[in-house]
Image 1 (tube, helix red, strand yellow):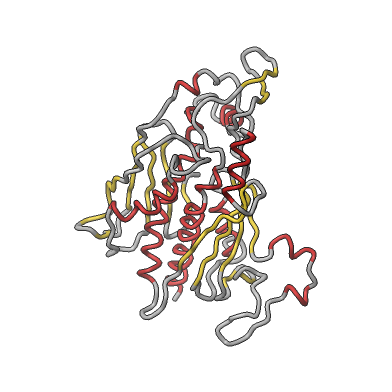
Image 2 (spheres, rainbow, N blue to C red):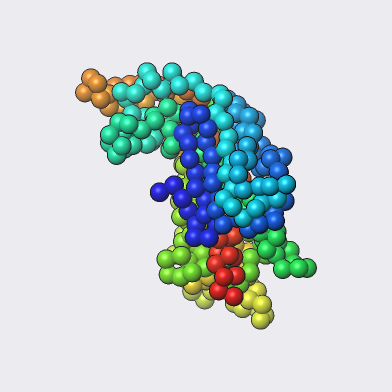
Amino acid sequence: MNSFGRIFRVSIFGESHGAVVGVVLDGCIPGIAISEADFMLDLDRRRGGTREGTTPRMEADQPEILSGVFKGTTTGAPLMIQFRNTSVRSEDYDSQRAIPRPGHADFVAGKKFGGFEDYRGGGHFSGRLTVCLVAAGVVAKKILQALAPEGSTPISSEAVIKTIGGESNPEKGIAEAVKAQDSVGGIIECTTHHVPLGLGEPFFDSAESLISHAVFSIPAIRGIEFGTGFAAASMKGSLHNDALMDETGQTSSNHSGGIVGGLTNGNPLVFRVAVKPTSSTPQTQESYNMETGNVESFKVKGRHDLCIALRVPVVLEAVTSAVLVDLLLLQHNKG
């Protein structure tokens, strides 16, 4: 399915080399001031070609609001935003149609959809679609501000790169990838402050379940951990437990990452994700040629990120904000 959320519902559409990609947001509360200019700061953070290691494909990423806004504010009707694809080189993909690229969805998508899928640039499986998630995040952040009780600080998320190619210095990790002429991955940490107590709908819609679900919609994500994550497996329970300090739920530590029993506990919500090395590497690879029936050496054509992790932080913030808006609206409906 291409939709996510129960009240604040995010639906994405389009393909990497199609005419447009876009997003429809249902459940957007009315009266939120919004303009196309409001999207540009976060869109620029995701944009390729702005730093070494990102794709040379340069898209304007100019949002076009087609519905749901009237006289500068949201109407409560579905909000539709699209982005035109103007920098495409589809011929790069025609010549390699017979050889599914390792690490990409080429082979499995072809089998699932019987060869009818748009394979250019990865089609609907492309990281190009994350521009839609960022746009959804911009709207979600505005709703979080509007839903904050008077006099309180709105929920806000910040994602930062922790490592690139195993290096804590991202620039060093990129430099080594450039030198090796191979792609690399990274680890990104997202921290959300001012999260109220009790958000989450256990069992299956627990706070970490929904965040994880949304996070894995981002191409190239390979893992997620909350708080101490996998390190908790080697800790004693007496050390891992977060001792309560007062009636607001503040704790002396935050090994849980701000979620206990599937519910937010009022402490910072902290999680990290692992981003795989970009599958389209400059290196020569081998794959099965469906026309010749042989395993052959080949090089991937097209324009690709050497490290897609560089562009993921703002996308993480976006999906986290969308999940929290949905949980807040669910909570308000129960109130």
